[in-house]
Image (cartoon, rainbow, N blue to C red; front, side, top):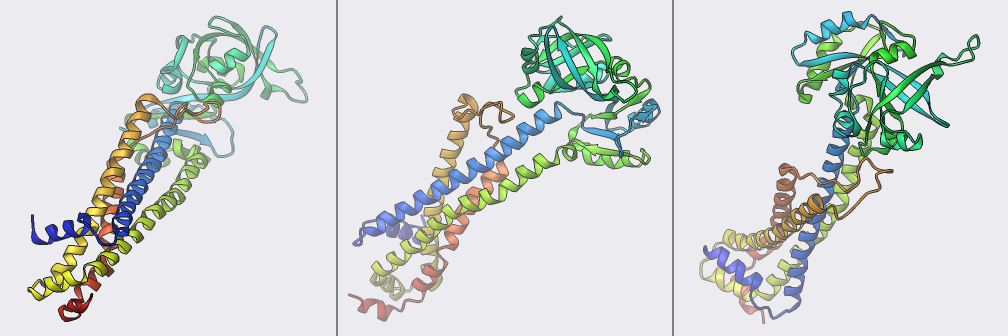
Length: 402
């Protein structure tokens, strides 16, 4: 152990004539620990929330969609899809027909949004295909996949016959909606109640018949081999599609939600950083009190030839010890809480309000390291003024102190 480290430890953890010094030192460590814990947990919850929402939303949507700028249907989408499929990052493209419908099962009725597409495309929608609780994806021509919440409202199960009413077909000249019979092939439970009660899925043939739109598409969905290629693929497709068609990524289609998540990060980081800031003030106060108590000892060290910079190093190491211990405790507490939440879901959430049934946690090593290292770094910086004052103490003046 170096001379500076030995003296720093003795000054910080040894006995003090001023008992308040030990108390305020412990308070500094506790404050840094609480600040680091709160900051790591809050940032990890935001990361977890964003990750979980992203996973589930992508599970309901294509990575990219090509739509008409004015909301009209795209005619003869097969020609455009062949060009899209030639892009190396594209897994598949597929036509989507979408519209608002009224469902009737027996005496029960309810509204929903019907999206129809090929079965191969539906199999790529994880939040539907990966959360089936009954039935399967074998749609045939008139099969339907619906959410568990909507199925309960209609008292429907797999095999139930339903009638679909195309509300968009009602006009002044045709006051009665076009009706199509369908059979429930599967029921999914994604955990996102707003989707489970509102979205139903069927084959493209069903949509073409119900919406009277053969050889057309409300949009063209594009699935990618790797979601990381979203931006580069979007740029390539923008050179392929022609006005008035436009390309939208999954994030652009849900940008309001993701903008809200981003806006939450800054104030949360600021608020919990204030806890660490208060603890850093205590660090400075602790060292100032130690200087007042140890003025004679500092004078003796300087009279024995200890250089000024080494006196400053001694007090810098005190900040390092306080910050390191506090950050270490905070790191252990935050990782421990995260492990318990991930495995035991101690804090539940109402799934009818949020997109999940428990508070999500996702630790990113860069966040954990930067917060912990930042706490230690600022603890050392908080010693700058006290260390500078200690370094300026003159031996003759220090030895006169009673």
